[in-house]
Image (tube, rainbow, N blue to C red; front, side, top):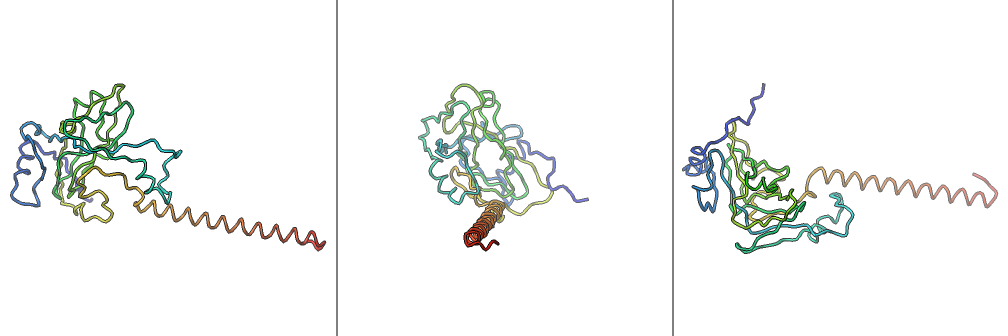
Length: 243
């Protein structure tokens, strides 16, 4: 039976501290700026702060977003707007509104650890979600972490850059994995700012797009063939020859 690479061991505060101070680069957790370790280090997690950059979605004129559209990258540029704020200026997240944010910190996780992003209880009780589905932080990941912000409450919330809005927990791996940085197709590794979705680069999107385009070509050829047969039938009918 294959050994599970992910162990159940969740790092406690002492173990997180040891990794932050580790003198072996491949074992070290790097988080910078770490403004207040005393305030940010919990019993088994490390609090993360909100950065100054956000991406909001301007309601487009399109009826839907189609990842197979050849112009989807161009469309994304038009309706995904970047907002950069000064430290004392809040970002207002309205009820049912979705936005992308990022951590203030740059984070590097060693290959023998995996991270998981969680919300903080205080903000969760106000209806603020910091991630929807993408909470896994891969071994070897480096860069800022993107927040998928959603106000699930009924009242607008002011989010100030620098607030502790999320927490990161760490789990040990039984076997170190190949670094996410060198994984083929690792689209978001090394980000130093909030990043837009890049779904059009996924392999399956290319396959679906090619299959759809080939299907269109086959359908167009079939229609041309049908028109050719119909024209021949009409010509023969007008000449009295029949088919």
